Figure 1: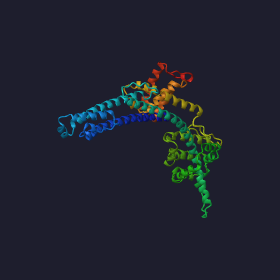
Figure 2: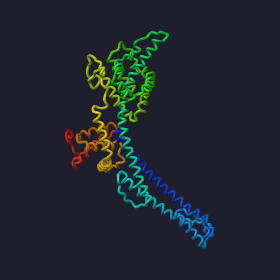
Figure 3: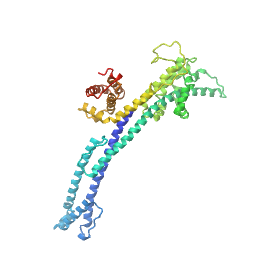
Figure 4: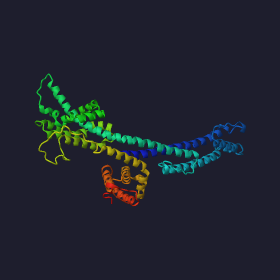
Length: 462
């Protein structure tokens, strides 16, 4: 959804960029008209006291400027009221020039209006048929604006698809970083203990003060070959991570009440170890501004992806502890068996299939954008579709796309999934709005034969 939301923003931005081109092209022409009008006045001022054979008019000037200048010069020379014209600062003569250029200005204003209207009508068409009463210059401006829109949009479509897959990889990288930071915190505790042991002061060492260093979850993560391999494959920079985690440890964790209480407990207990690691992950690593600023530099959508990363990390801790329950505390544990061969959490259960679905959903939405826009517009006749919340429009388009193009997904499943997205990402009223609109649209599409389902897609398809 993030990619299509970004693409919708891109459409709007490219549309405005093309409109801006039209505006600037016409602004230049309006300015030129004003400049030409002044040129006529300057030529008159320069030549009205000369003889006709001695006048000076630049050969490169526009034909209309030259002709108007000659006309008002002739009018002045042939007038019997030259003295009166001079007293009036030649206003009657120059008024003829202003009237002529006002006609041009009005005509250009109308032409601009027509060009803007046609652009709004055809800008998304790949090979638009342009029918507009306008000058060749204006037609060229229109064609250029449409070309800019399409070329920029095609570039954005490709870049966003690549960025979407990259963003998915970043989610997994951030999950690994969270786990690595847990091991680094334990390592910092052990380093503190070693430094105190080597101190010349030989102060007594209280094991409880360094309890985190022997945390069974941290040690299992540290010794995990799977985590080491994943870190190498992702080329995660330990040095940068350590700089951040040192600051987090000194400024936040050592002052955290739950951490202090954990350190005061007796001998290490696996359940206590799990609880403190979960607390540090959920409430510090994935929440504090020190680490959030780091994650945000890697992931522009961190505020949305944080919950996914946190969920993956918590599931990993459960796997280490041998938990099979979905939520902590759902069952009493009589004995904890540490799973040293735990598996890292996948981004999804069937990632390869998900990537294919991901790409298809994106590309179908790109290809059918105008069709889905028209379907929504017909169902929202009393609304200006441009006033629709952008996120709602994206959700509706994605749902329509999925209903039409993915034969194995039941209609009801699609509608329910996108209602959930509306609840999570849009306004409080969006759930009801999206639900009602999708139900109505789905019914129309089924009746028109645009929705064809097979296999599992036929389930609950009423």
